[in-house]
Length: 447
Ligand code: GUN
Ligand code: ZN
Image (cartoon, rainbow, N blue to C red; front, side, top):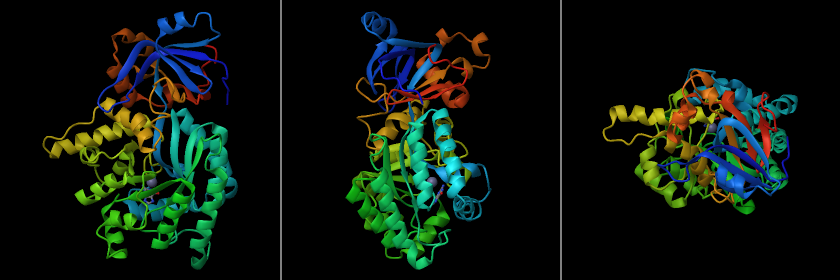
């Protein structure tokens, strides 16, 4: 990883979306990074002129766009090797395809895969990720170690489950061991890496967690001011199961409410099949939602009622949810989010579509808000920490540099090209806190 301690400037088409529904852009723009922050953002000529006398090192990769780093609010480290596997719905898919892969994610296998996973995130332009490890303490520990080395901003937690788990422990010991190990990991890693690394207590979902497990996870998260992450109302069969396990609860969300799992530091994955009461309860608790459209399509789980959740004022980010989602590429997740709302509008009258600028907002500023990090990341505002990506526009166009003239493209055109055709092939550089954590092999540092 390269460190860039002196001020430097990057030139390109600046595009961000601090507000839902609109883009902000500078065609020939630039960003000056000082230490770990965006010192200035604006027109290139202006910044170049004003900093003529200062020792700013300029990076100019030609026709590129500069975006805030992408934020993945929900993904699974041990599952990446199992992407695109299986054809069943959630519960059999977990049993047949996922638990066997997670069961193996310990020792040398975990040590080998974890660095590759975080490298893959950086290569895809993801600068912040909220991640589940497997149930083993070492799977989370090596995950944090790899996250630290990667330079990325990572919130990670050991998977907690004490019902139908895949480990070797005697059932009587599972709960206490899981709590002890989770606490130990939190003490070791929460706030490490100069604050880049944070802990998320991670009860899997109500199907595999006892009430005691969920309550204890909530208490630990509160004690350490750490995050909580879990899955909610993803699949009809799952909801039915939770209903039978918790007959006295009003609904699935009520199970989490009663255990203290709904907090402003909680990320709820999926949330597809919620009643008005449940939406209201989540909004009132100021809990947050990770929308995982590619996963929901892969498993046939359902179509998110995004308009209702936004209307309730809930903070929503996007999640790749690998391995139910087939890729870590957040541009594909944005495309999935748009397609889901299009699909809904085919059978429901007067639904608003999700525009590319809005999907992009969810993957940047929206994710930052859902993680309580709006003041730090999510846009290209001066003063924010410099998490950004540099994207090669020629790599997105059908005929590359020989085709359409770049001058003809506006910010909306460029964003649509990224969402429908973007990915690691077009990602030149990824920066976190002003440090380059990924540079494409064909790109030189001093371009
Ligand atoms: N619900 C509980 N665990 C999981 C998981 O690993 N993936 C998905 N998509 N849903 C879940
Ligand atoms: Zn998940």
